[in-house]
Amino acid sequence: MSRALVTGGSGIIGRAIALSLAAAGHYVYVHGRGAKTAAVAAEIVAAGGAAEAVCFDITDAAETNAALARILAAGAIQILVNNAGIHDDAVMPGMRHEQWASVIDVSLNGFFNVTQPLLLPMIRTRWGRIINVSSVAAVMGNRGQVNYAAAKAGLHGATRSLSLELASRGITVNTVAPGIIASPSTEVIFPKEVIAKLVPMQRAGQPEEVADLVAFLASRNAGYISGQLISINGGMA
Image (tube, rainbow, N blue to C red):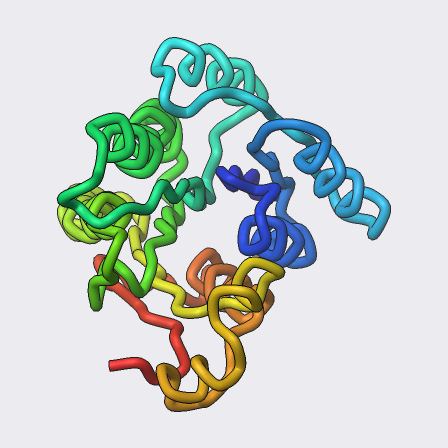
């Protein structure tokens, strides 16, 4: 049984990814904070899967290292989904430094803090899957999200470079960039008539559709796909 870690596993997309990986037979560490994280792990166990919740601050390198050391004591993580990310939106002329720094800290520094300690144990197994979750905002840009777009776009370059470093070790690295995905907040920000104008398929995507793509990239069937940025956005250009 491969062991997987999903950061930001208590959110809408993170939960769907954790459930999908568990359904594929992986032992899933669901990362996050608070009761929602434990609830996702419990949901997986109740459905017959194997999971546990892990809580640590990915922007704190020392705390992350300590938490990952405990996880690695039971064996290598072979599937890593870097899904954690935050929004703190403002047009750049009015953006505070703290808004810029906090968003960059989670998506980029968090990516490094989580991924780097897991690499050598993964390399030793000669097999692994790393999937980074980006956003349509990083591909197309979005007003008021210069910080978020920059943070997520940084993952694209990191993905490409890391995929070259790990290709000979049986480890793939890819990025998935979701578009407008259905959630309670999405329904407020993007009414149906707005979605119809923005998205050629004229609907929001479902979290499970993103999760299915991630689960495929995490599978042995995706062993020849690496270094790619794959958009899942209903045809948005």
